[in-house]
Image (tube, rainbow, N blue to C red):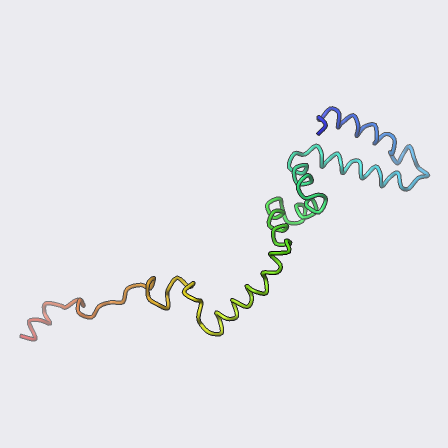
Length: 135
């Protein structure tokens, strides 16, 4: 892309051309001036420029609303294959809740593989005084 010097010169030239003070009779000049300043702010900031190059103006809008980190997740969740899988995930969740069967995806708590060990009655602590009393 253009360097910062060329970008600044182009912005200055366009800003002087569309400045509202130089075009008081043209209401579209003020809007054009705002667009020029917004474009310059986007192109001069490396993060905003990267977001704009990858996702367009919608990416910038999402970044302003939710932060730069949320842009990638927003576009991931708006993909067609992600949206088509939502009903399947909802069905699997309902199936798991209604039948209490998660097809062994619940860390095997139902089978006991990951359960905390139960105390064994044969290794229970016995007080020596109780042993003497039994004899």
